[in-house]
Amino acid sequence: MATLNDVHCHFFSTPFFAALGGEAAIARLGWTPPGTADTLADRWVAELDRHDIRRAALIASVPGDASSVASAVTRHPSRFVGFFMVDPTRSDAVETTTAALATGALRTICLFPSMHGYAIGDAQAQQIFELAASTPGTGVFVHCGVLSVGVRRKLGLPSRFDLSVGDPVALQPVATRFSSVPIIVPHFGAGFFREALMLADLCANVHLDTSSSNGWMKYHPGFTLGGVFRQALAVAGPDRLLFGTDSSFFPRGWVRDVYEAQAAALQELGASEEDRAKIFGRNFDRLFPARAGAP
Image 1: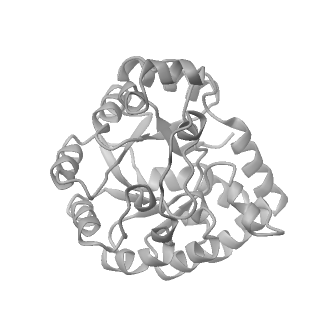
Image 2: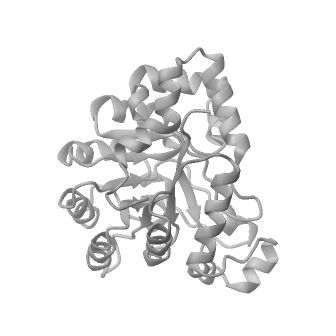
């Protein structure tokens, strides 16, 4: 199998679960307690090895948990790339983002406008893009479209998200202004597929991640995964598609069936071996080259 890298894995750490109710929440879910960041990092490495995955992006999935992913990356620098969530509306957002980037272990800032209730063009969000632009090698991940946090739903917790600020079209002026910053839009725009394609067509620094089951296709009668890939390849091209699964918790671990479905879709539409190699591994390595000193 060619090099396989995953750009979308959530690092559900102990601090992440603390925000949801701690050990009681983990017990209700029936999931494996994460333990320390190093323990969870080792578990992920074993899981990647089991599925022949060379590298993965780990996402700190609540604001303020950047240190957990930084620890994982420091422990396994050749296997992980660090992503971390930022809420620009917090008074300490600039300070904490600056500190996180200064570790050298965190390379992409994750923004969730619908979750935290701001427009991507707001001055607060612009400050975060400015930090990314001033730190070479830093990307920005922007979740657009439908947002559903499965763990909150399973625990019966409210998810008061604002879909009206999740349109990829709103990202176009920002992506144009910060043209040196690689921008990743996950899940093909998560329901705003046409808008995500428009954005990618106009902004060469925008990449689409292919992650999850892409259940948003139910909003588009007749859509198939193969058809989505065909259009994305036609508009964004093979160099700006990044394979991801949206894997997150244990004991489920890495979601292999997501990979298998995407591999089958690309095979069926006749994507070349070269294009598949870019999507499943090479584009990740180009955006996030291994750093000096990593074994």
